Image (tube, rainbow, N blue to C red; front, side, top):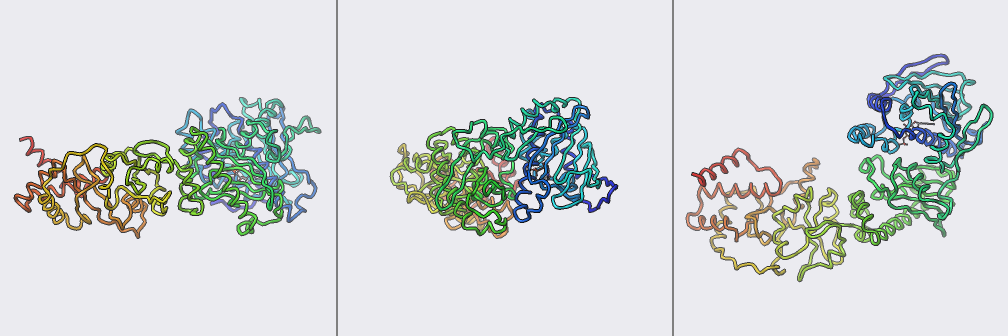
Amino acid sequence: MAEKKKAKTGETYSHNFQAEVAKLLHLMVHSVYSDRDVFLRELISNAADALDKLRYEAIAKPELLAGAPDLAITITPDKAAKTLTVADNGIGMSEQELIDNLGTIAKSGTQAFMEQAKDDKDKGGIHLIGQFGVGFYSSFMVAHKVEVTSRKAGTDEAFAWSSDGTGTFTVASVKPEAAPLRGTSIVLHLKEDALEFLEDWKIEEVVRAYSDHIAHPIRLAAGTETTRQINAASAIWTRAKTDITPDQYKEFFGHITGAYSDPALTLHYKAEGRNEYTVLLFVPGEKPFDLYDPERRGRQKLYVRRVFITSDAELLPPYLRFVRGVIDSEDMPLNISREMLQHNPQVAAIRKAVTNKVLAELKKCFETEPEKAAKIWDAFGPVIKEGLYEDMERRDQLFEIARFNTTKREGVTLKDYIADLKANQTAIYYLTAEDAAKAKASPQLEGFRARGIEVLLLTDAVDSFWVRMALGFDGKPFKSVTQGAADLDLIPLVEEAPKSDADEGATATLIALIKQTLGDQVGDVRKSARLTDSPVCLVASDQGLDRTLEKLLARQGTTDVKVTAPILEINAGHALIKALAETAKKSGASAELGDASGLLLDLARVMDGERVADPAKFAGSVSALMQKAYS
Ligand SMILES: Nc1ncnc2c1ncn2[C@@H]1O[C@H](COP(=O)(O)OP(=O)(O)OP(=O)(O)O)[C@@H](O)[C@H]1O
């Protein structure tokens, strides 16, 4: 927890960095990354955020702007002192905020960042810095000491934070005359190998590359009196599409997401009519680290007439949370409070229209650019599929986008699937499993393969949920191949199978005996229509849950899920089953058949990737059998 001490004028308190922050700083201080320019982008980005926050607060309290209504970021290199200062006259930080924000409260994701940075030595993890929100600490890549002086807007107290990036930092109260009128000034005492950041050309190069679009002026101090603006300072989304180069879009995308890659899709348009607003949204080309972090859901920024309002307006549904960017409304009131946004009908109308637009753009891209589509689906498919149960209204739209791997092909749509239905096939068959290899090896698929029936292989956790709720597609219900009766008799085999010479009576006797032996370990024992090669398999009953979902919920500790006993299906045409059936017919119940029944059940479990019920007993039975075979 942050320490609650208050420094009086002239007093200095020392604080320990939180352990996670200290580790992160260690990484920064000892970094050998070549691409250190990013620190400046991060500091400018923080400064711009501070200006945005002030502008928003000043709508209700214009007096906050008193004395310096002109909002700007100023960069001052000082070659003699070997310092680089980045200052803003934004919202500023109180003493407690300095302590919390710059030292004692690690951002969610800090741990994840360090783990990934460790595993990602080649890229140095550097491209992750912005994404993980560890921006400020990147100063220590170039500085051996950092001093932050800040005065919160509307207060007359100012405080100075200082650290060399090892275990501790200090916070002291400073005399108002030694502090900026408002906002934050960050002084970096540069390391000897980072002195190039004192050169005007270097600073301009970095600003042009990463921060040109920042909507506030960025000024470079030349000498003590003069400054000159070094960025375009116009909100990129307000410019005509034809005036924006792909590099400029990429730079803005980098600012919004922290990524250094190209966006996969860029949507830039102006909506006119009842609501007027501009949209600049991106679908990233890579999966961000926090895609599944529930705290970081919607991340689209809402502006009203160029004034930043909030990132929490949920402008898109959670299943499109990977789409990042800006929506700038022309007609919403500027003084709308963040709380009011939730029930604002204009926000609801924008959400609806923009969601449809994003889905339409995805659909268009998926139809015309298969390679890009595969990449996007690979990164975000599991998230988009959440929409299949969260957004029933758009389920059909989502089904048009969704891509599936099947027993026959990769990346097919449901429309493709329907086009390949076999004669008399009335359902869309699927198999849920933990991964593709396990799915493909499932014995339950044999009868479907023998009939040339394509089966969707659903291997994302989310699949088990939507597939139960979706009613079907194009009038065909979804049906699990591991659940219920297989109903395959009406669908012809690809190759005519030799007529079964299984003794019906003997099989029935065997089934009755196995059922008796296994008792309530199984829900039923029956002859299988879905097996052709394997002797046995397990399936779920029609009423219960799919077996994969059942296992998934049990693993998650969902307590109200009752794991139901599975149904054991046997392949009457398999040599092993035929031999057992003969034995059953001749000698009825015997210890040998009892053992075999247990082994058959264990065999089916193993094929499903499960553990056997009693490993010692299983091992005993198998070795007894082997002994018999080899002696
Ligand atoms: N110039 C500044 N003015 C006011 N507050 C600042 C400034 N720089 C940093 N802060 C505060 O310190 C916090 C931590 O900054 P840091 O760069 O480490 O992460 P961040 O910018 O919040 O991360 P993210 O990129 O995820 O938003 C910021 O959220 C902000 O509250």
